[in-house]
Amino acid sequence: MEEDDKNHQKEKEKKMKKLLALLAALLIAAPAFAADNLELSGDFYLKGWDVTNENGIKDNDSSFFEQRLRVESKFKANDNTYVVLRTDFAEGAWGDDFAYRHTNANNKELEVDRAYAVLDRDMFTLTVGLQHFDLGIAEVVDYSYTGAKLDLKFDGVTPTIFIAKENENGSLNDDDPNDDRNLYAVNVNFALAPFDSNLFFALVDDNGKATDASQWGLGFNIAGKLAMVDLVAELATFGGDNAAGTQAYLKASADVNEMISIGGELFYALGDKDQIASLSDDSSFNPFDSNTPIDGDVVAIDSVFMMGKGGVMGLTLFGEVRPMEALAFGAKLGYFTPEDDDLTLADSMTTFNAWVGYDVGPNTNVSLTYVFVSGELDAGYKDPEDWGTLQGKFVVKF
Image (cartoon, rainbow, N blue to C red; front, top):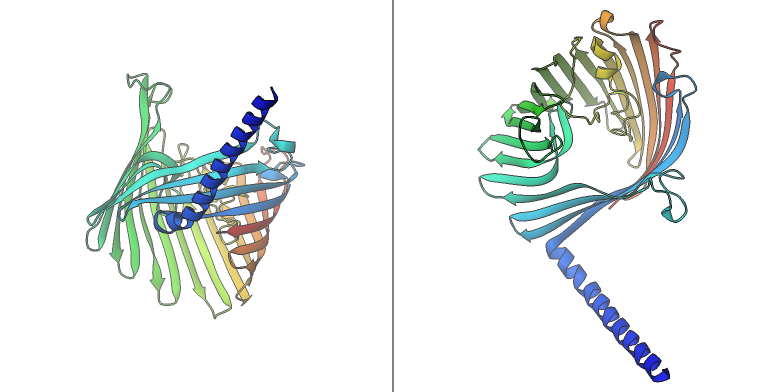
């Protein structure tokens, strides 16, 4: 028995030595492999929130911390072909999505939101798999889809064709009750001096038994510099089954000097009982905080949707001061009213934000942002209250 134990121990030691040798070989080989075939990037954030009267509901308050580690890996097969994998690790709120030793079943240990292959050639680029796709200012379409994108390369013009499978509608069988929901989109990018321009069309074709509807969006977008002013403009319209809408956006900004920049935005959306403002579900376009370090965190409702079906007419003014390269301050004031008062309970909405950001070091930033929303609402809206959101954010990029 003692001899067997000794032999077993020797076998364990031999296996451990082999494992250590393998790990050492991988550590030695990894830098060379990474330099030639693998690129890594990503970020870590920690956000602290303090929200008062969220969505304008009295005493609907919350305060919490949340975190996320995001890693994007690019694996090169050759000079023209590569695969991208983007993964989010340990994303969630402290004490809710996470518990001691992660015993809480609600925690999100791992989420893959990009997994696609790219074939890049002289005349075209083909991207297939789980990928992000947007059109214009990321309002008409903005989401992660499983699909295929083809970019054609011509002198001065880049047509893009995108086809995505959104939903199999309950079965891989495509008989009428289970026919699929697909997205079809075409974007033509071209130079219209001094602007970079895009003309696009997207169609959501949903033939499932619960919906059986098709909706489309058509738009034109420009971005560029006119004299000292940076301009972004978009006009889009929607139609199809139970869908209508026309909306416009204009943003102008300029550097007054090396320290100060100013700008403004105009918003318009036609009120309609069948109004839609997007063909996808990601409302990341948010004028309330788009000038701040928390742009895209969606701390307040989108101006196009906040008036319900009443549409919107709005104006914002914003500015930024950068007294030193690492330090910046900013603020923004906005005012919005419905385009059609009869289709909404909202009479008007005033918004304000103020923020400060500081680069602690290269690729490391801390910021503090406050967003305030105040609405004038009809009596039919229950207990409207001013809505305030304070967020502190720590970001490390690599």
